[in-house]
Length: 400
Image (cartoon, rainbow, N blue to C red; front, top):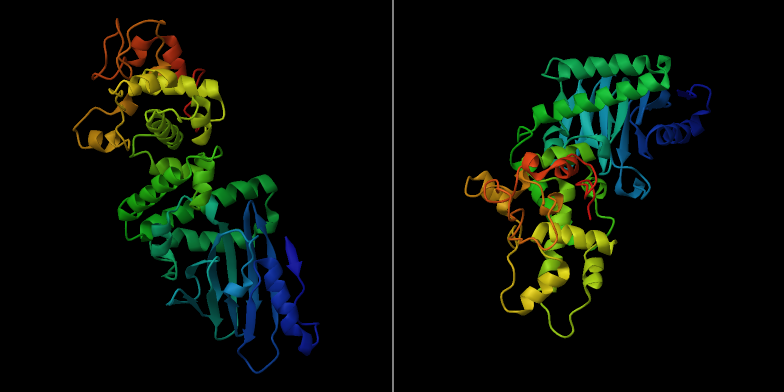
């Protein structure tokens, strides 16, 4: 806990500069405009709770503004949560405004300009939640921002008094306890966002986010570093929330990245021609850094090595992509039009003898296919069962 000295002992002409510097040190650089005729006085207590930054402010009438000029590239995107304990405040952001009284909670985005206008003496807690820590979509956050949540309003009845008591006693918590309490705050905020979201946390907003994520993956397939962690960071969400979004897609993000890379490799290899690049060059172009791994997962998806795929394509009868050009079998399966390939292991996860006839994904002589796509884990043998649960033989957690 850090105690910023009050302005009481500071000469009047220096108080505003001292106050502005104290607010900037506690949270983020801001502009301060006094609203009263007398000298500006105040006191700030700041600190951290796990990864969350907070401060408690007591001061006189003023306007606190964060403008585009204040934003620094090093600033972490965060969601500001203000709990007013005395006085009133008006929050202005994105052309909207909300007025709050004692006990009310206000939410704002610290990455965009905003103003907090206090017309009289006030006291409040301000908490900054890192955006990437929140299991909240952009749509859910928009439904919550710049609105006053009353202490008797839904989950606000739990969150507002909880935050007030938590931050009042923050200095007494051991670091490990503070980290657990911070995680509780994040979870409660996610519940509040879902409650206030116009999409109910599972409608159009979520679908739009999934489409944006799929587009992001397609535009960055050539980056070897593309992985669930980088995808989540690019969309300002946590990895846990990213996986939650794709539960209904019936494909993991890592598997989607690998599948789309393999599709682009297969498309390029099928072009053939004298000037066709080497197989290793194609693999590298689409984000595969290990040629042996690429060959193995390619054969697992298509039933042929990359060289065999190229040779078959050169005969004029190119083999078929089991997922379709854009991998939309998932949506067809959800509509009941086709069995879903993600319900069975990749062919790479099913052991087979060299030279054994191989007809597409997962179907091979001597094994009864499940829904025409491949054997069940029980039929596939112990190696396939280990692989399906994250063992050797191609972990689904790898992007490539």
